[in-house]
Length: 84
Image (cartoon, rainbow, N blue to C red; front, side):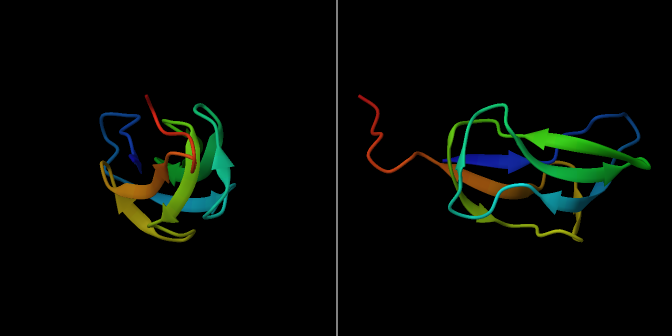
């Protein structure tokens, strides 16, 4: 399981607002793929997937204001892709 968190992109950044998600719960995602867009410091920024798998949960929907470090979503391993 991998959490998608809001990363600080400037020293002044404390919060961001989720503009939109490009993926829905249950969708496959690849590491580096754009998951969502946030607005912070009067500029929109894309947030990419930190891991490949399935977007299990969206914890902060569009319109939510969140703090730096807060979990926005959770990615899990694809079913049947056990490591070994």
